[in-house]
Image (cartoon, rainbow, N blue to C red; front, side, top):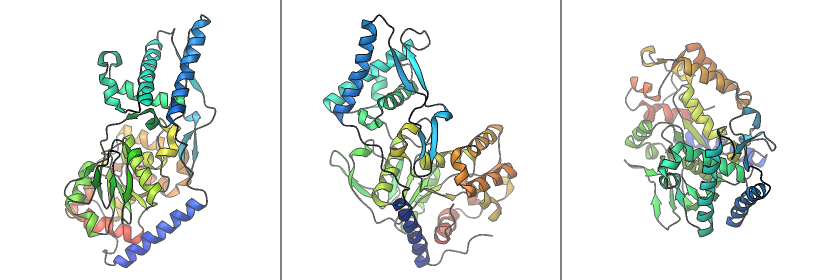
Length: 393
């Protein structure tokens, strides 16, 4: 059975307002801790100098210097709080990057190389992208992923948010809808929903004067679905809203923007993802964060995010033809089992039930499966009815 066709804007706004009130109430009850304090330039420089000083002291003692970094890939170092998400425990296990070890000597050198570049950037108050860092010496770094991982390690080691290192990421996300702001260089940006979207800024920290009359924010997993909503003029037909896509697994800037919009406006935020383990994983990253970036959870997670669709139960409810579904692969099943074991699932019984439905069906569905009903069913019926009647979990 489908929802009753959307007919009343009054009831739509009433449901969203009730949701907004409950979100603000939860904030007052402590479900919205302040993000970790920003580090000043002098604090970042001092932290780097302390590391170099320790290395010099080791060398003066004829000892092989090493770097100690928190282990970001061990679940034992992660704790879960429903008001923040996944975050590293205060005294977690560490790993040593030794200068005299064949396995880690090169990484030791690369960390020092990038530390020296960060020091110059912070000292001169200039910025560079991760791509810029990589292209300073392609042969030395080998590939972009190595640079990205080292920058995250440095941020974790220095205990400062990554943006305080003056290293920016190239954004891949898009945003559209009722939002305008001014970028750090004074450029005025208007994201009014049209046939094209605006790229997520590279320096989220620098944007200011954010203005919106949106009633909610919708995070869309896929670029194709995002573009379809733009083509259907979704932002204006239903009510003023903002839609964002990270084009799959979100980059840091897309997550920072979602967080900034939540901190600024406290809008209800919903996710629209495929009814598959990968889509659920992406939603979890926005809501609760990832293990690898858990050291910066306060700056990235928005635990108030709700799962709007596509729900596995929608597959049954809407009688989606089995021919449009895709069998779960072995990797899908492993991913599903992994998510079900995570600490935040215990406080999300409705999520657990949906994943159990998926496991029982042994099938997954892409959002595009809804087009079997009609080409514009997603924007004309599915989303409006879900939003009007509170069809999220």
